Image (cartoon, rainbow, N blue to C red; front, side, top):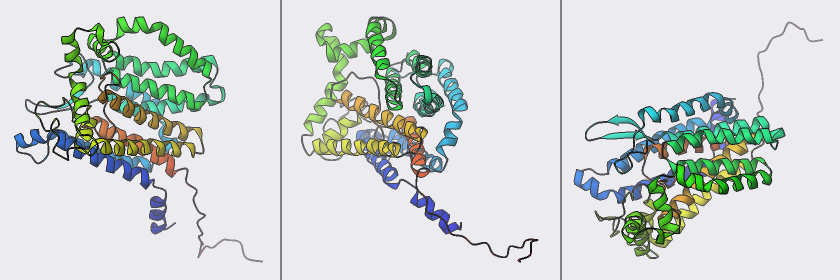
Length: 403
């Protein structure tokens, strides 16, 4: 096969629709982050803020990695599951040595400092990378037991597989990521064909353990955030106002945008120093709502829904279970984070620190999500039907004479 044919197949087998949609969504997210942090950039005399710059750089590296991963056979990637799993566990355990929190949550040791100076710091959140690792290792586990996946022993081992990273992440006080892992676990088990009775038993066990989870595993601020949404009368007025301040400001910002929005870089809340806290990250959806209105929100939701649906479509068309599980794992991850994040912004769910895929500032999330997209593109590539290639051998000699 010649060089031109190789390039032809490489282009033909690339899922450009998914790739371009993701890149354009990230570009739109960077624009929203730039708007949310515009005042900071102006004060520093910069064209764009540090948060926006980190997002662009991380996404750029992620996009390059995505293209590279898309050319790797996904079966070969899953074959490395033991090494990937071991690395992910070590990475999570390193948080207990090197992990740091934030100013408002010093007890949450979710980040590892990469660069740290008096005026500048860059942190990495391992749970973002471990989500991709879990997607791969759990797929390998399901593939290994697919012929007898409904045996009690295999279901228990699969549950233990998921509970190891979930348990470690809960101990680092990253409840949001733990919930995303749990949704990926449940979703992939369901798609793999685990019988419903196991889900019923698990649901009953979770309900029975709720008092223990509430008293022993949830931090005080988590409890206040849950009560503020679902049982506000349990909190004093002062505590309630303090807990819902961020979400209430975000909801006000979304409402003020009405249908068409106030215009890019013109949102009253977004451009105010006393606007929505962390609106460049967890609350970036409020920037869309205020400056681009209901129309902008619906358009964004449609694009994110399309990305999830496209990933599911690639998974359904895969010729083997491995490809399907990888794609569904990515779809559950992106879908769960989208629903939780927007639910937080609309005060339908408690605030638990989940970024909006492709949209929120943050190097870790913008880098790692493209690893998942690269794996999905690999599934797409290696399940394409290739046309036969005609070739002719010339000037070949053999020791056998023609008769």
